[in-house]
Image 1 (cartoon, each protein chain N blue to C red):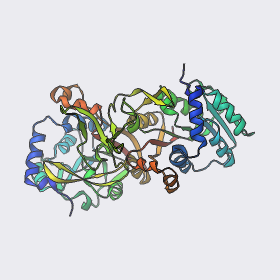
Image 2 (spheres, rainbow over the protein chains, first blue to last red):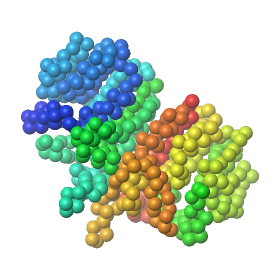
Image 3 (cartoon, chains in turn blue, orange):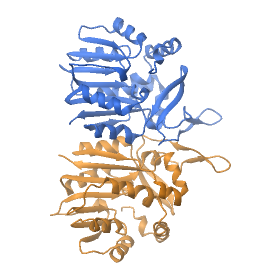
Image 4 (cartoon, rainbow over the protein chains, first blue to last red):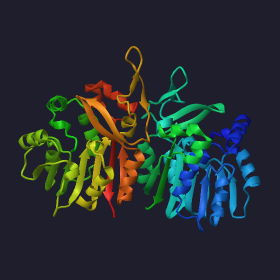
Length: 246
Length: 246
């Protein structure tokens, strides 16, 4: 059974409030980085792994994509997507990414935003992405930074008595695997992987690394959400842009 | 004036004792990783940037290299190299890497071991390496891991009252630049760079990333130097294997 926190009622409510607020890490840190990495969507066939409520699918068709397939494990998310981000060139599929089975279609671009750290078998994911991509197609994804996921005892700002952040704690770096966390609900499972694993698995599967990003917030985000200044102290996200070259 | 700690008497004595002991991070962690990344030295022209006492230069000629040039800023190191690791196919040059000027020769392989973090202008270094490499030549180097160099207040094991290591402290990640440290002597200057800078500068200069490593010790090292177990908790070194492809 794949983890499906987004269909937990408490989680979904919390998550939706966060995203609705328009003041969150995704909008100010992660999404601008992803969008800056995209060179061209025009006439492209796009797959979005972990599409959530379909905002990015809409962004793709608005920027010229000829076809977008959005995949998400959560019925809640897909339902919301079909209401809020319906379009004749967008198709939504409710499925765990791991069990996705698409035939007779290959994509020019595959995206995945902050979903890879929920997936246990990273090499299997990369093989699947490789299979689903056209030759020279691009895979661009974000994941939690290994600096953030490494320590088993998570939430790692070490603070003084006055609640000032002293530094970020790293530990257990080379012990890849499960990390359990509270995020709206208890028992959210993420998977820690080292930078070497994230990058080398792509290379050994025929991808060329075109760039990596450890995004920070721009001035807008810093104004509306001052705590984003902490992204300078340790990066939350890790973005890889890669291309299928063999 | 480039930093030349290796010609400081106190430093050189301390450093030599460390290397002579045969029980150190280089021999158990960093060098095995580098050597595992080398596919073929046979008939290769090799440049070693920061060659120290020439041990690796000797390793290269013993493994078939047709020519090795070793470069080091330190007169002490080069003097020792010409005594201990002299060979008709090895040439030593005493020069800061930054000021190295070689004409009429290009290399198949360029190495640099734990020297890049002493160099202020990383893009200039990468441009120089690119100029000195044959097309399809490889650049393999190790540097201190950004997890290790990030925090301005260095030596970052946070310990409890009984001197047990609790975790590793990271901070100031996106503030690249100078870090001052005590290593045998006060005032050793290193330069912190993010992972994105280390990798993207190579890519934008025409290199393809062939793999990265965050090496740990093998069983031998762990037996002779039990504290190497801490490399599992946070990596000290970062190794990049890259190839000039345009």
